[in-house]
Length: 214
Image: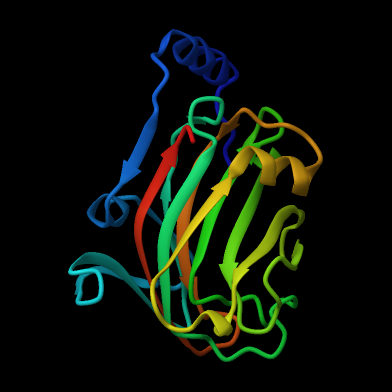
Protein backbone atom coordinates (compact mmCIF):
# COMPACT_ATOMS: atom_id res chain seq x y z
CA UNK A 1 0.00 0.00 0.00
CA UNK A 2 1.42 3.38 -1.01
CA UNK A 3 1.97 6.17 1.47
CA UNK A 4 1.59 9.84 0.73
CA UNK A 5 4.67 12.02 0.18
CA UNK A 6 6.02 13.50 3.41
CA UNK A 7 5.10 17.07 2.53
CA UNK A 8 1.52 16.38 1.44
CA UNK A 9 -0.04 16.34 4.94
CA UNK A 10 1.89 19.48 5.91
CA UNK A 11 0.81 21.39 2.81
CA UNK A 12 -2.72 20.14 3.30
CA UNK A 13 -2.79 21.47 6.85
CA UNK A 14 -1.49 24.85 5.67
CA UNK A 15 -4.20 25.10 3.05
CA UNK A 16 -6.85 24.13 5.56
CA UNK A 17 -5.62 26.77 7.96
CA UNK A 18 -6.26 29.39 5.27
CA UNK A 19 -9.71 28.08 4.36
CA UNK A 20 -12.98 29.63 5.45
CA UNK A 21 -14.94 27.53 8.01
CA UNK A 22 -18.08 25.93 6.63
CA UNK A 23 -21.39 25.42 8.39
CA UNK A 24 -22.57 22.43 6.35
CA UNK A 25 -21.43 19.94 3.73
CA UNK A 26 -24.28 18.09 2.03
CA UNK A 27 -24.26 15.14 -0.38
CA UNK A 28 -27.29 14.24 -2.47
CA UNK A 29 -27.84 10.64 -3.63
CA UNK A 30 -26.43 11.66 -7.03
CA UNK A 31 -23.33 13.06 -5.30
CA UNK A 32 -22.88 9.82 -3.36
CA UNK A 33 -23.16 7.75 -6.52
CA UNK A 34 -20.23 9.78 -7.90
CA UNK A 35 -17.93 8.87 -5.00
CA UNK A 36 -14.92 6.66 -5.69
CA UNK A 37 -15.80 2.93 -5.81
CA UNK A 38 -13.54 0.56 -3.89
CA UNK A 39 -13.86 -3.20 -4.19
CA UNK A 40 -13.02 -5.68 -1.45
CA UNK A 41 -14.68 -8.70 -3.06
CA UNK A 42 -16.55 -8.22 -6.31
CA UNK A 43 -18.85 -5.28 -6.98
CA UNK A 44 -21.94 -4.19 -5.09
CA UNK A 45 -24.41 -2.60 -7.51
CA UNK A 46 -25.09 1.05 -6.61
CA UNK A 47 -27.63 3.00 -8.64
CA UNK A 48 -30.13 5.84 -8.40
CA UNK A 49 -33.78 4.82 -8.08
CA UNK A 50 -36.98 6.72 -7.40
CA UNK A 51 -38.30 6.02 -3.91
CA UNK A 52 -42.09 6.40 -3.59
CA UNK A 53 -41.88 6.86 0.18
CA UNK A 54 -39.57 9.87 -0.05
CA UNK A 55 -40.84 10.94 -3.49
CA UNK A 56 -37.30 11.47 -4.74
CA UNK A 57 -34.21 9.65 -5.95
CA UNK A 58 -32.07 7.63 -3.53
CA UNK A 59 -29.10 5.28 -3.76
CA UNK A 60 -30.06 1.61 -4.00
CA UNK A 61 -27.28 -0.84 -3.12
CA UNK A 62 -27.59 -4.52 -4.03
CA UNK A 63 -24.93 -7.09 -3.18
CA UNK A 64 -24.85 -10.60 -4.58
CA UNK A 65 -21.97 -12.16 -2.66
CA UNK A 66 -19.92 -8.99 -3.13
CA UNK A 67 -18.38 -6.22 -1.04
CA UNK A 68 -17.58 -2.81 -2.48
CA UNK A 69 -18.19 0.69 -1.21
CA UNK A 70 -18.39 4.29 -2.38
CA UNK A 71 -15.81 6.59 -0.75
CA UNK A 72 -15.52 10.37 -0.48
CA UNK A 73 -11.86 10.96 0.35
CA UNK A 74 -11.41 14.57 1.43
CA UNK A 75 -10.35 15.97 4.78
CA UNK A 76 -13.32 17.32 6.74
CA UNK A 77 -12.76 19.57 9.76
CA UNK A 78 -14.82 18.35 12.71
CA UNK A 79 -14.29 21.64 14.51
CA UNK A 80 -16.50 23.14 11.78
CA UNK A 81 -18.92 20.28 11.17
CA UNK A 82 -18.84 17.63 13.94
CA UNK A 83 -22.32 16.26 13.23
CA UNK A 84 -23.10 13.70 10.52
CA UNK A 85 -26.68 12.94 9.55
CA UNK A 86 -28.13 10.60 6.93
CA UNK A 87 -31.09 8.44 6.02
CA UNK A 88 -31.01 4.72 5.32
CA UNK A 89 -33.33 1.75 4.86
CA UNK A 90 -32.96 -2.04 4.67
CA UNK A 91 -34.86 -4.16 2.19
CA UNK A 92 -32.95 -7.44 2.60
CA UNK A 93 -30.51 -8.53 5.28
CA UNK A 94 -27.69 -10.93 4.39
CA UNK A 95 -28.05 -14.42 5.87
CA UNK A 96 -25.47 -14.57 8.65
CA UNK A 97 -25.22 -16.46 11.93
CA UNK A 98 -22.96 -14.16 13.98
CA UNK A 99 -22.19 -10.63 12.79
CA UNK A 100 -19.22 -10.34 15.13
CA UNK A 101 -17.24 -13.04 13.30
CA UNK A 102 -15.42 -12.95 9.96
CA UNK A 103 -18.00 -15.29 8.43
CA UNK A 104 -20.79 -12.97 9.54
CA UNK A 105 -19.25 -9.58 8.80
CA UNK A 106 -21.93 -8.63 6.24
CA UNK A 107 -24.40 -5.75 6.54
CA UNK A 108 -27.24 -4.48 4.39
CA UNK A 109 -26.18 -0.89 5.11
CA UNK A 110 -23.03 0.64 6.57
CA UNK A 111 -21.80 4.22 6.88
CA UNK A 112 -18.07 4.63 7.52
CA UNK A 113 -15.99 7.52 8.76
CA UNK A 114 -12.19 7.22 8.54
CA UNK A 115 -9.56 9.14 10.52
CA UNK A 116 -5.78 9.05 10.51
CA UNK A 117 -3.90 8.39 13.74
CA UNK A 118 -0.45 9.02 12.28
CA UNK A 119 1.27 9.98 9.03
CA UNK A 120 0.45 7.02 6.78
CA UNK A 121 -2.62 5.23 5.48
CA UNK A 122 -1.65 2.26 7.64
CA UNK A 123 -2.43 4.40 10.68
CA UNK A 124 -6.08 4.85 9.66
CA UNK A 125 -8.92 4.08 12.05
CA UNK A 126 -12.61 3.85 11.23
CA UNK A 127 -16.08 3.73 12.72
CA UNK A 128 -18.56 1.55 10.87
CA UNK A 129 -22.14 2.50 11.74
CA UNK A 130 -24.37 -0.47 10.92
CA UNK A 131 -27.96 -1.63 10.79
CA UNK A 132 -27.49 -5.06 12.37
CA UNK A 133 -29.66 -8.17 12.40
CA UNK A 134 -28.76 -9.74 15.74
CA UNK A 135 -26.76 -7.27 17.84
CA UNK A 136 -28.74 -4.85 20.01
CA UNK A 137 -28.70 -1.12 19.38
CA UNK A 138 -25.68 0.48 21.02
CA UNK A 139 -23.48 -2.62 20.94
CA UNK A 140 -19.95 -2.12 19.65
CA UNK A 141 -17.06 -4.43 18.83
CA UNK A 142 -13.75 -4.58 17.01
CA UNK A 143 -14.02 -5.45 13.34
CA UNK A 144 -13.01 -9.14 12.95
CA UNK A 145 -10.72 -8.30 10.02
CA UNK A 146 -9.20 -4.99 11.15
CA UNK A 147 -9.14 -5.43 14.92
CA UNK A 148 -9.10 -2.27 17.03
CA UNK A 149 -8.41 -0.10 13.98
CA UNK A 150 -12.09 -0.34 12.99
CA UNK A 151 -14.96 -0.28 15.47
CA UNK A 152 -18.46 -1.47 14.66
CA UNK A 153 -21.35 0.45 16.23
CA UNK A 154 -24.96 -0.73 15.93
CA UNK A 155 -27.50 2.04 15.39
CA UNK A 156 -30.48 -0.03 14.21
CA UNK A 157 -31.76 -3.61 14.09
CA UNK A 158 -34.81 -5.36 12.58
CA UNK A 159 -37.12 -4.01 15.30
CA UNK A 160 -36.84 -0.65 13.53
CA UNK A 161 -38.81 -2.06 10.58
CA UNK A 162 -38.18 -1.67 6.86
CA UNK A 163 -38.90 2.04 6.50
CA UNK A 164 -36.57 5.01 6.19
CA UNK A 165 -34.76 5.99 9.37
CA UNK A 166 -32.85 9.22 10.03
CA UNK A 167 -29.58 9.23 11.96
CA UNK A 168 -27.53 12.03 13.49
CA UNK A 169 -24.17 11.40 15.16
CA UNK A 170 -21.64 13.63 16.86
CA UNK A 171 -18.50 12.25 15.23
CA UNK A 172 -16.07 13.92 17.60
CA UNK A 173 -17.86 12.37 20.57
CA UNK A 174 -18.10 8.92 18.96
CA UNK A 175 -14.42 8.93 17.98
CA UNK A 176 -13.39 9.92 21.49
CA UNK A 177 -15.60 7.24 23.04
CA UNK A 178 -14.46 4.44 20.72
CA UNK A 179 -10.76 5.27 20.36
CA UNK A 180 -10.05 7.20 23.56
CA UNK A 181 -8.69 10.37 21.97
CA UNK A 182 -9.76 13.50 20.14
CA UNK A 183 -9.60 13.78 16.35
CA UNK A 184 -10.05 17.07 14.55
CA UNK A 185 -10.32 15.73 11.00
CA UNK A 186 -11.85 12.80 9.22
CA UNK A 187 -10.13 11.68 6.02
CA UNK A 188 -13.05 9.92 4.34
CA UNK A 189 -16.70 9.00 4.58
CA UNK A 190 -18.19 5.99 2.81
CA UNK A 191 -21.25 3.81 2.33
CA UNK A 192 -21.18 0.06 1.80
CA UNK A 193 -23.59 -2.84 1.39
CA UNK A 194 -21.93 -6.27 1.46
CA UNK A 195 -22.71 -9.98 1.47
CA UNK A 196 -19.37 -11.49 0.47
CA UNK A 197 -18.61 -13.49 3.60
CA UNK A 198 -22.03 -15.16 3.71
CA UNK A 199 -22.05 -15.63 -0.10
CA UNK A 200 -25.62 -14.38 -0.02
CA UNK A 201 -27.46 -11.19 -0.94
CA UNK A 202 -28.29 -7.88 0.67
CA UNK A 203 -30.22 -4.77 -0.39
CA UNK A 204 -30.13 -1.37 1.26
CA UNK A 205 -30.81 2.30 0.49
CA UNK A 206 -29.07 5.59 1.36
CA UNK A 207 -30.00 9.28 1.15
CA UNK A 208 -29.29 12.77 2.47
CA UNK A 209 -25.80 12.53 3.97
CA UNK A 210 -24.82 15.86 5.54
CA UNK A 211 -22.12 17.26 7.84
CA UNK A 212 -23.29 20.17 10.00
CA UNK A 213 -22.06 22.40 12.80
CA UNK A 214 -25.03 21.61 15.06
